[in-house]
Image (cartoon, rainbow, N blue to C red; front, side, top):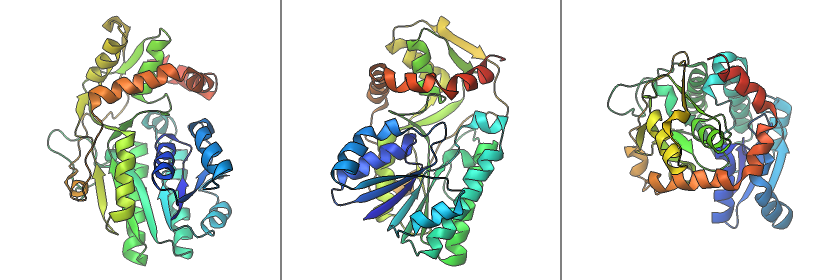
Length: 338
């Protein structure tokens, strides 16, 4: 199978590429990525060497999904499937400026869908998020629930999902949508909670925790998400939406304490800061549909969070390159005034 992965230099995308190329020795992947601040080719140096220069099963194209000419050229190579990860994905940044989120997540998705329709791509997997359901007090969000996004980011992702669905209904395009809960693991850009707190604490800085820290998220290791997307790619039903939840609800303060405990730090390194606007209180997914396909999370949180902490400890050069770049300006702007 030949697969086009968009946003493959990002966190989940790069882990997915590694998963597929290792598991399927006859598959080939083209990675289309703009290399924004969160796109990092260091995530795939081993893949490029072994599967690009060596086995010729991996290729990289630097390009923007909002560039119709570039998208037409790449999709014109007629991949069997498109896995669409490319997106602006950080809620905080969408609050500062939503323009890029609408441009990339909505208009970019439309350009990609049009190219996939033109070249009769056999399967289009739209990668979504649980945030489109909005905050829930109790129970679990199901695929058929009304979407109630509460941030510019989640609104843009909901729009992308609905657009993908419309192409299935209107044009018969073979679309499948996934919506996963909060991912964590190696190669995650350090603006997100878990890598941010790990790296700050390693550097002797405080962990900036929003509000009272009681916001609840369902944590899913990125390896489990990649397994789920793999299963959906091969066995998912066209036109369906699949929730992918880790069945692992924890408050942000619990996550923070887990990291502190493992690193042998006291809670005086928690810095409670003003909450962000519209901060959803709780997400939780009903993943019964994908479990019917035979998937369930394999990574135990208690072990995988330790593995994640150790990964950041052992890959200081990876995150130092990031910390020495655009990230510092963003961090100061985001946290220094709270």
